[in-house]
Structures are given as C-alpha cells and as structure tokens.
Length: 283
Length: 264
Ligand SMILES: Nc1ncnc2c1ncn2[C@@H]1O[C@H](COP(=O)(O)OP(=O)(O)OP(=O)(O)O)[C@@H](O)[C@H]1O
Ligand SMILES: [Mg+2]
Image: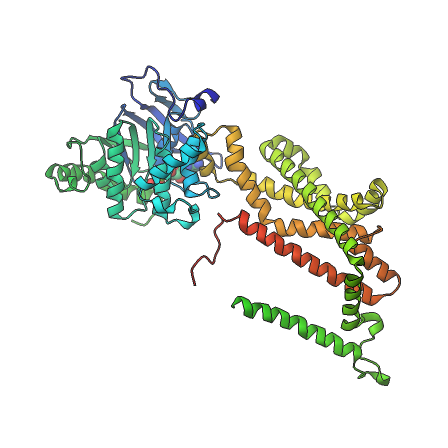
C-alpha cells in the first residue's frame, strides 16, 4: 500500500494490455438484513475494456451503486468474481477513481483543499497540488468558489467539486454514480462534453451510472440495462455505434440516436414499472 | 432583535433586579421601620459594589483571580489532551473500548465532589488538587465527544478518503482528527465551564487562595457582602471566559453550516 502511494497519482498498470479493465464474472451480491439474506444482484456479467465508456441504466434500487462499490473494492461479492486488468481484486481498487452518489466531500476542507487532497496524499507538494486543483476547478466552472466550504455550495456545485476531486488524480478507471444528477440540462451537457474530452484525450475505462437513458446513449460506447431488484440481473447490453467525437447536444438530433433510444426504452419501461410495484408502490 | 437592542434589554434585566434588591433591603417599609428583607442575610447592592471596588482598588483580588484562572486553564488543557488521546484510542480499538466500557461509565457516574477530599489528601492544599478535580470533569466530556466524533464519520466520506488513496495515518489526519475536533469544539463551552467549576469547588472545599477560597472566607465570618461580591466576580469571570471561547469557536469551526448566513 505504501509503495503504491509513493508512485504518484496513477499506480502502474502492469502487463494488462488486452485484458478488460473491469470484469464482473457471475458476480452476486447478497446483503444480510436482520439475519435474512437480501439478494440485491443475482448475477452480473460485464466487461469494460480498456478505454471503453460503459453506462449502467436501471430502475432505482436495482443495484447500480452496488456494482460500482464492488468494482471499487469497497464491498466483496457474495459469489462470482471481480477482476481488474485481469487480476482478481483484493482490497481497494487502487486504479479507480470513484465519484460517489452520496455527498462525500470533506466538510472541514475548503473546495480547493478538497480537490487538492488527492494529490497531497500522493506526496505532490502542497503548492503544486493547489495550483493544479485551481485549474481543475476552473474546468468544472467553479474557479470563483475555491475558498468556500462544501455546505456553502449547491448540490450541483458539490458534484462538480467531487468530479474535480476524482479527476485530478487521473485514475485509469473511472467509476461515476449519477455524477450529473442534480445539474440542470445545460450544465449537464457542458459537463458531459468535458467528460468526453478528458476521456478521449487519454482513454480511461469508464463505468457510468445514470437514470437518464439519453445521457447514457449520448456518452457511451455501450449501455447496459439492469432488471428491477431484488435478484437483479443485467438484461440488456447495447453497443452504441454513434460516431466519435460526439457533441452530446448535437447527437440527440441524429436519426440513429432515436432508433437506439426507442429500442432500449421499450425494454427499460417494463422494468421501471416492475421495479416500482415490487418495492411496494401502488401500480 | 438587533444587537444593540439585545444588549440594552440584557442590561435592563440587571438594572431592574439590582433596583429591586436595593429597594427591598434598604427602604424602611417593613415592621418597625426595618427593610422588608434583612440586609444582614441579603446584604445590599451598594455594599457589594463597595466591596468589589475595594478588592480591585487594593489589588487583593488579582492574586485570587489569577490562581483560579491558572487552575481552570490547567484542568482544561490536561483534561482535554487526555480526553482526546483516550477518546481516539478507544474509538480506533473497539476491543479496548468494550473492555473498559463499564469502568468508564462507573467513574463517570461518580459525583466528582466526593473525590475532592481524596485529591486534597493526595496532592495537598495547593493548586494541584483543584486541577485534578477539574481534570476529572473535563476529561469525560472531551472523551465522549471525541469518541463519538471518530466513530460517526460519514461512511461515504471515509470511503471517499480511502479511494483518494489515503493510508491509515492520512485518514487520521484528514478525516478522523477534524471530525473528532469538531465534536470536541462543539462541547467547548461545557468543558471550559466545568474546568472553572472544578477549580472553584476545589478551592471551596479546602485551599489558601482563589475565588472559591474568597467566598468560603466570607461565609465563615457571616460576611454576606463578601459572599455576594465573590459570586459576582466569579460570574463575570465565567462570562469573559465564555466570550473568549466563542471567539475561538468562530475561528475554528468556520466550515460548519450555521442558520443565519444570509446578508441583511
Ligand atoms: N448495505 C446494505 N444493506 C442492505 N441492503 C442494501 C445495502 N446497500 C444496498 N442495499 C439494497 O440493495 C439494493 C440495491 O441498492 P443500490 O444502492 O445498488 O441501488 P441503485 O441501483 O444504486 O439505486 P438508485 O438508482 O436509487 O441509486 C437496494 O434494494 C438496497 O436497498
Ligand atoms: Mg445508486
């Protein structure tokens, strides 16, 4: 662990070429609630190739965040395997950057300190770390907010600080849980395009969770649909053959975009309704 | 309410109470031309003010104030340091915490006053026994808060810290420590208050100097004006210290959400 820390912002990837960056192999997750097992994810089989952008879409409670937690090494599967660059994941995934769904900024650090901390703990000097953090904050449109504390930001601003916090470390694998959830449509597109720029400049493997199917299609190489929980599975896996580079606002006007959207939505709609009634909603 | 209005209302309360006290203890409205309330037992505001004035003009009070301040400060610092260290240790070592849990509760339930004579026996009549008493009070407040602060770090913040590459030592410094400190500072008023209580009670139960000693001396000679004067000096002393704590708190907890952040 110490050794990895010292190597700087991105740990060595080793002889991983050709192997998928992330591979779920028959991964099953069961939680224990009051001594009863609750199977959140029955079986997930999914590969994210090096440099591939994969989105997971599914009804609320289907286990999207759970899959990201598995890929991050924060929880271990009940059965099946999780491999990172061909090696079974033990402990935390040191190659991954994780943007959490819930608030995860350090409330006692300023926005600038929050972004710089990932470099500082990797032994980048404070001065240099803060300069780079400033650059990142400008990129996410928060250059004027560096001295604020997280509680003084809006939900969307906090998400963007989180984005900068993760991206500044330049992780090889990006795990993002509804990063643009609380943003308005315009900012969403700006951030989406920013993400695509960064991603295409140096191909990271991205596992992106969203509720917004259009966003998923516009951003991704592949869109994966999960069934409603419990006992959720992956029920669809679409390759998105839209040309790159993309502008995510323009691409929504293309004919092919609508075709793909209709195809996936037909499947997703049933699942959303099923998920709602299974969780005890009126239907 | 505006700040000035608030202060004048607060002063108004003091003026009314003092006037009432003055009238009841000096005006010959009672049976046989005596005041309604006997000044022998209740003194009078003017006597008390004269006594306070005498203490300050002769300069005798400063030594007592200084002693009480020293005792309170030492009790606060030693109790806080010990509380932080043990609180951290217990929070990071659940087994240790579980083993000592009943003992911590037992000692905490003990009224500290019963310890005062023992401390006098052990540490003598000087300031050490008062500091010891204050430490037993401050320690538990800080200890419980730090313990809580370390254990109640948001799991997501902790997971984020780990994902950002922090090792155990860095987690301590950037996550557990700030969280524990924020809990400790939120109890700063209480722990500082208890440090003063420990000092004064200790002095009261046996000493040769300090505000508690001053009050005890006056009581011994039925000098009620002296008792009230001692109580007032103590009260103002506590107010000043509390004001300082508020200043420190504002600086240290800037990152905390507060209700009234809007511009008026
Ligand atoms: N620690 C846990 N203990 C017990 N059950 C859990 C735990 N974490 C998640 N679950 C359950 O697992 C299921 C999947 O949760 P998860 O957070 O992965 O959903 P999600 O797909 O991310 O939903 P959303 O879109 O609302 O964020 C849910 O039914 C949830 O109640
Ligand atoms: Mg989720």
